[in-house]
Length: 251
Image (tube, rainbow, N blue to C red):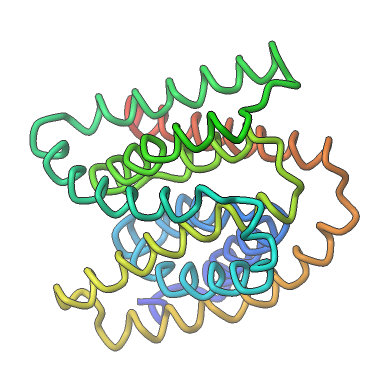
């Protein structure tokens, strides 16, 4: 399908993937949020999502492995990952009884409430004992939204952002669950035969700018202080919330 696009259109797609990979290298977030809307404008949403699954897996492996030394700082991670898998199964049931508009509106409301709370109490953070109690609920809720809407980053990102983690620790914290869910999505797409040779080629083509950009983003992160890092995360969450509302109510 890329062969049907002009050089300028391919360049725009590559630029979107590059920008998404760069932001992901800095924050652990960004590739699907920033790249899918642009790619979907040329190839369609389903096509864009499928093409970015393999780059998503590779980039999350990269971030998780590079920052694996931060794992002891997230003792609840195993619990979150386990309950995320359970939540994905529950999400298929939720999808059958709740409308996409309701689910997406709840997700946008979650982001809005979180941003308001952060602005009102910027020093708020959960202590370890509270984190241990919340972990199963966070994992389950993230899995439910992943299984029902395909969007779970807002749950994961708001939870780990509320812990006031160091930038590198935050990147590891969000990359690990993203990796598990991306792998599950990739396996599902493969089982259902949704990957054609052309889509695989396009996915590996997308890897090139994504990998180059994430490497640059990881280097830039060293020069971003925690205050600006937190502002960047809140900005990305705001973009996600606005995009969800736009797609749900105005598109």
